[in-house]
Image 1 (cartoon, rainbow, N blue to C red):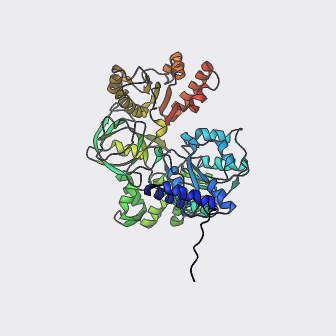
Image 2: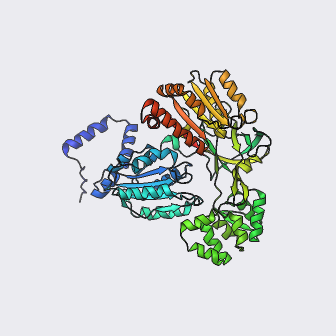
Image 3: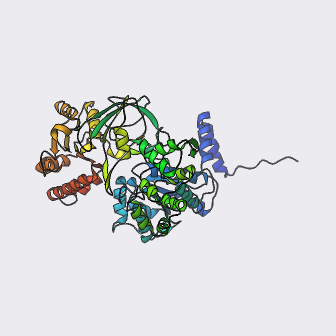
Length: 579
């Protein structure tokens, strides 16, 4: 019996067209077409799977430090493995009305500081919370919220998104997850639950939208830092200043691609040795005891010095310490509302808790219960295009009152104590929203204190351009004689024509003076530059610059009409870098 060949699944006219096309293709074109057809969903599918492929799950992230973007990409990869089509997008690029065309939305967002949404997603946040937000009756959603429980407004941005999406008619897929700084495990568990309820396509090889090139993962990150060596650690301010400001120069032997003026580096600081010793003594533990951290065996003293927060206590540690210390007061607190717990912890740092409620936990259990030591971001103060083998930072000592004493910030203390030859662990943090524009529009640079750091890098980059945009610098510090940071660099930039206008305010020299004074005194110049398309940058202390922004908004709206300041933001000509 002769086997019958399976006829092609085309009509005669279709088959004739296919053969005609194939006859015109070379080997390379045939190979490309075969791969294209193999990757395409050419088989019939159910209505549900076809809909899922054409309207993928939208994963939107809002971030300041890149953690939420990484989680969004990780979720997208897990979805791809499970046959779930996804699209990943920065919420800064998303408009709320676009959600009306979506079936499934996942939001992964941080809360910045004490209750603010991440600065890049302010427009999306305002639009979703505003009266003009669309009805979302067909939308199914889920929210993963990141925050820091040491703040009163813990995870509030994610909570607000979650409540607002429901109020607009959306249906919650799974319960929102609020994560503290040790977010990896709860985020992973939340993603596992989410994967069970997201729509799948028939094919398991689902292509997901790649992130925009500007936010691709760098070669170095906080899990894989670059170690550099200190070259210079110089005090820029008065020797007796309570909060001195230092200029650090670090040897950059490895290339960090695409680290541009306006970007930052994350510093992985070490806890001071005396703090580590005090924790070991309070727990009656030896620093030589072995522990395992992220699969890496190391002495306890190393884990405490480099990887664990020995200052701020999280609610998880509160429960852990209550169990090991058998303290009735702590056990009662663990049964109280989370708000009451956080209020207690804002008045108790780790050593306060260890001394008031003594306990003797196992070394590994202690390491597992402590919060991870968070990196700190510092703006790069030089242009690598001018000097590619050094990295410059500007660091101010951070001191703050706590109960009846004063404490020092871990990262600034670590950096200011470094000596030439000491190693520093860091990684790049790209801040695309605070870079120089591609065109030659005028620039208005407003700096408070160490906010001058990225502008020093700006000036170095601008000095190498053949066509230089008009540039106006407004800078504030304490005293002219002692605190004019990078004075020689600024004066040289002015002499070279890189800076067209320089205005300074020194608070101690002119009591009652404000950073906004030079701008309001030259409101005609300010308005003219903005009308010419100027970009306005704000960098430095959040409190002072937020007040300045409110005053500028009032002045500009009065002069140019209501909405003038808001339009500046819509045109992406308002750039903030506040801390």
